Length: 230
Image (cartoon, rainbow, N blue to C red):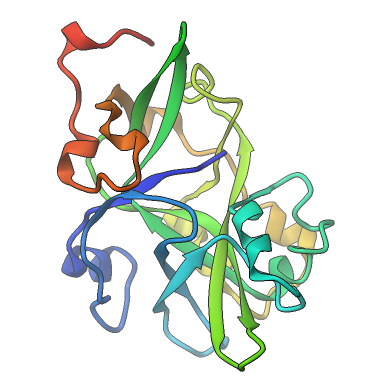
């Protein structure tokens, strides 16, 4: 699964990395949690450029009666995403990139859990495969929200959790965002495991356990004397 991640990259870096027409309005975040705003990239027409949107993390289907359903829909399983009522329309029509530069998992160590940070070895931003939807409240106010697709964990992640977010290769960004592509089988074929050797995992402070803590200290590696693990 994915329940917490970071996006501390500068706006200019994000614009270049994701070929955006405009610099995104984004302040660095180091401990993003469900129900908070995330930065997404999408394309709304076949001829359109990529654009950025801030979206609430936790997908609220357009047909939902209660927006609280989004609190339970922060992740969508790749194996069943085309079948579940909350996601089966979005996988055909509303796919997005959810931008990150690290994510967190927790390793059970006796009675405590040690948080680990997983990021690219070069520190560059990357993209989770995401879905989005648009919901209107009874007063007509619009909420755009998203979910992160997950898959079986790689060897790097498996010591902490049996699931991990789907990280898209840059070569698959355009095919994933192609609004003209609606065949679920061809879309799902893009959800390939990321190359483990491009990523690293290291222990971080328990500060990240509290979403109120949101600073660069969340992604700082613990000294080796303070942590153990793979």
